[in-house]
Image 1: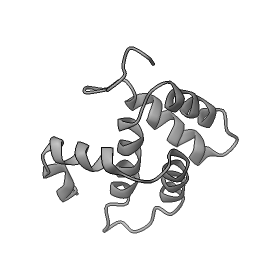
Image 2 (image 1 turned 30 degrees about the vertical axis):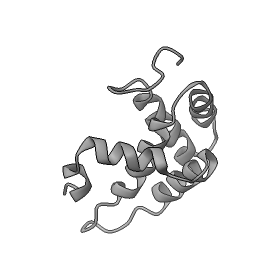
Image 3 (image 1 turned 180 degrees about the vertical axis):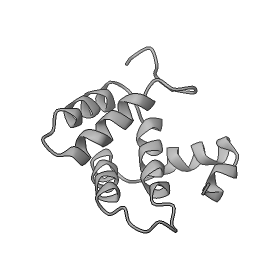
Length: 101
């Protein structure tokens, strides 16, 4: 099932991501926690997860690239998954600092 948020204009979502006050570490810890807690076939368990990853993507640059690479080397499968998802999105359309990563 699609989240209603995906119907929100991209400009509105980007403004929300840019204004998010949480630290990168808090967002990463939150994304890992969301993956660990996936339950319920009737819910959209990944909506909160992808929102966190989207904020991290918006902030991407050399520091986020390094964090994503570090996560992929983790012994924890959830940390690796977050790292891989971040690496897959850091160079997407609209990437703010594509030349730096």
